[in-house]
Structure formats: structure tokens, C-alpha cells
Image (cartoon, rainbow, N blue to C red; front, top):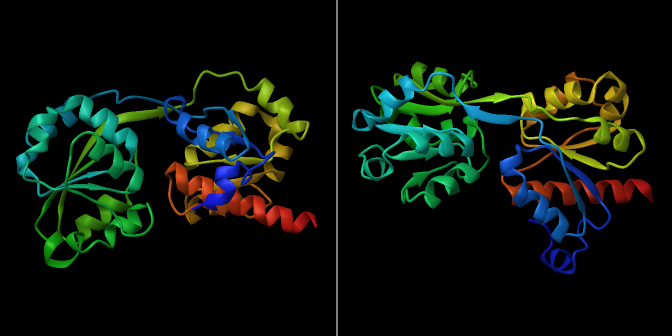
Length: 273
């Protein structure tokens, strides 16, 4: 994590101007941490989270939680929108253990009162969760698994569990959409060199950023510095033409992103000398 002394003195990110692209309702924590480290947080949500178009399949699954051996939440948004449909008192007593793809998702479940949430020891991805012993071998074979996710979510988790012999069902509780925002101020700021680093937490968010700011911003966006949450996302950034190697955070939680921003800052301070 970011150096404690530097954090206390507000020096870890002093003067750094960071574009925070999390959804509006999830950006305050990261923005506050950036400011506490001496940086400037520029909030520009590139994804809006909305309820899924058809919630009936998810509601039916939640009414039968005791039929499942594992319930996996893939994101904090899955927790928020899933719990809005659940009888949380009943869910808290369900026999199926709750699992989370990463620390932020596990923390959201624990804040809601779930006391036994399994999560990866390291990392925050489908790959990391699939390495858990309870999702391998005999533990997976024949088990019934409910995956709570957004519409059109990544298939790796469900496909791999199916290959391991699990019976997988999905509860799609939210969808992602480009927000109705005017990006002209951000575009002008970026062109004038007023943004040092950009935090991106999803592939769709990165694509929306380019779309929302328009073709006139493509060049500075490709030359900008990025902090991302996975090697997979870093590879997608390169495929879009982003020239600088992205710094990959250890997870998608705010503290992991701050630590990655500190590493980004340190690398650029060395290059400037």
C-alpha cells in the first residue's frame, strides 16, 4: 500500500491530476483518497449502472437459494443490485456459502451482514477465484453454482465451472450503459495537459472513455498514463493504441488503486530526472 508517512503528509500524490472514471456512485472513496494523498481527483464517470432489463430470472433464483451449493458475486454492483432483490434475512441464513471475485465485492457482502464470504487469497479476477479449492476437483463436480452478475458478463467463470462438472446458473441483476455526460471540459483539459493519469476499471469503461470524448481526444488519450485493474485490461489498452505501458493494480479496491497510482508517480518521477 502507499507509504504511510507519505500518506499522512499528503505527499504521495502531491500535484498529480487523476481522472477517476468509476461510476458516479462508486467514485467518492477513491477521489477522497487521492485528495488525501495530495493529488487532484477529476471525476468523470464513463459507465452508468442500471437494473437489468428483465429481473424475473434473478428473482426466481434468489427465491431458491437453498438449491445452490455456492453463490458467487462478481462485483460490488452485483452485490448492490442483487441484494435489492433478495430477502437478505433469508439469504443470510441460506446454506450456500457466499463467494466474491475480489476484496471490494467481499467487503460489500460483509457490510450487508454476510459473515462467511470466501474470496481469492491474491488478486481480484475470475481466474483468481477459480484457483480456490472449493471450486476445484470433487468440490466443484456436481455442485450447483449461482453466479450473480451484470448482463452479458464475462463467461470464463461459468464456462470453467461447467467444464469442472458444476451446474451453473446466472442471476443477471444489472446492466452497464454509457452515461449521459458532456465530455467537452474533460477533452479540453486533457488536450491542454491538465490530466496526468487515468484510472480505468473495465474494458467497457475504457472504450466508453474514447467514445465520450470523441475523435478529437484520441491522440492525447493514447499518450496518457493509465492505471488499470488487470493484465487483460492492460492488453486491451495496448490494442486500442495506448502507447505507455499501463500500471496494473493488485485489485479493484480503492487502496489497491492508490498503491498503483503511487507506483505510476514514482516511475514517472524517475523518468523525469
